[in-house]
Length: 369
Image (tube, rainbow, N blue to C red):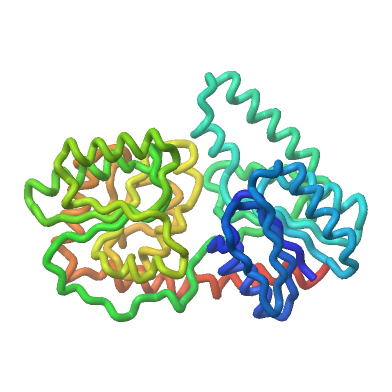
């Protein structure tokens, strides 16, 4: 029996639930799934028992509750966590049950994350990163396996640890390939899907739509996702009003993963307008592969994690440059009826960047202790 534990992700998280858990169930494993969220969602089924705890409880209390659950279960053989904050759980498990294999799944480069979002001055920020890294290292002695969701672009922060490292990217399933492409569109329909935050280049994208509107008045953009802060939501809403783009931009709250595919396929062009930050220079955007599978022309900021997977099959833009984003979108639209990019990108998904290519690698981590 495998215990999967998360304290911040929604229960039906695309990577955790739709890919990893479903793959393990498909391979015949039974899952105990523990989450800490405000979602009213019970995913208990034939091969899974899901226990969700209210987000109001602290992570420490959550860890204690999950550990107490695990203690009474005699047939747990693996425990996989999805957040750094849950490392104390692996320590408690390992000290009590040395035979249980512990797995630490790291979704993002944490040092890059802190360097991007910390508001502290650089010396203090770096000192805190060093402290966090030291504290994490003290828990790694209780970890049997590390999973990285991203290929390290610069230095691998875990290279000096003695823990085996496996890279399991968050590629889409082959069933998501859109094979019914329809390029008979007359308007420029653009989609952005992901967090709505400053480092994602959302303001630059809106300015780009303003530039394009002077040429194509019917340009339309769908922004799909959750605003990171209320303040940024307010700024973007004001910006849309001030630039007279209310009829051109539609903001869609975050939708369940299984619904996003139909929405993506109703657009012509997908845009990843990231600014250059420590985070965007390290983490690979899952949305890149979703757009490739959906059959969209793609405009993306020229940052290393994206270039690591595609070279000549998308339209590059300069990070933080709204005119460059606008030019990329216009170029993509001009080629929409005579483009090899889409077929090449879908071939890359079929041949290399799909979850089926990662299933066996992921499951192999649970085949031996």
